Image 1 (tube, rainbow, N blue to C red):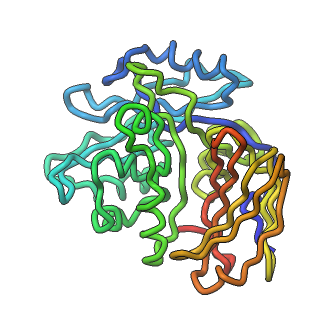
Image 2: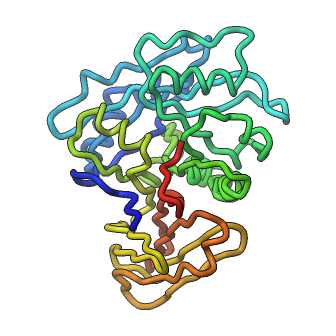
Length: 303
């Protein structure tokens, strides 16, 4: 059996992508942390734009930590240039406070690799928002994940979905995770729309970061995934009440169960085995989704 949430602990709710007045956000760091804390989030990464015009900020949110709410240091890091001539947007969570500014000759793939070497969880940010190609994304060899839902992208441009890109990379054999985020800037109602639920033993930043890098989490707009067990012939899912539970594999491989207030399902694996991985989607009665990370059927973790 393969259990993507193996290990002790419980699920902690967090947002991995947020901006403040340290870059182009409309609320100061204290207000942003208070907003998420008071909404019941367990942790937050404040990820201001790591650019010279903002002073290359790694926004220090450590003063806002408590026994019931914590923060991860990070940034949205940038370098030239994608195939479309756009500046790279790379989410780096768990950066050290002294992460060196981007060098003039540094390019996106190298910058991502440097962030991973510094200990960060790195995600390819909002690919649909700025037309990131599969080839460009595939060049970020060091990434842990793709941002598959970006709430501000959905609200402001209707370009919040990154699953098409991630599925294409998975079909190429990349072992990448998924994450949903807000990317809140607070110019429009772009907060509380997408988050991660991380299974960790404690709320310590180090424990959360290790769980993120190991893939012990799922992403959500509302529904909860309580358990996933991948057996030889079927996948068992337990979840909050849902209208549809879907199992997806490589290419067109998919199977679903629909009903009223489903709290779980047994989904056959037959059509999925050729592709080598599966993922689960839970859809509630309001159309909100929760997404598991890909689970590789050989039992080898991502990386």
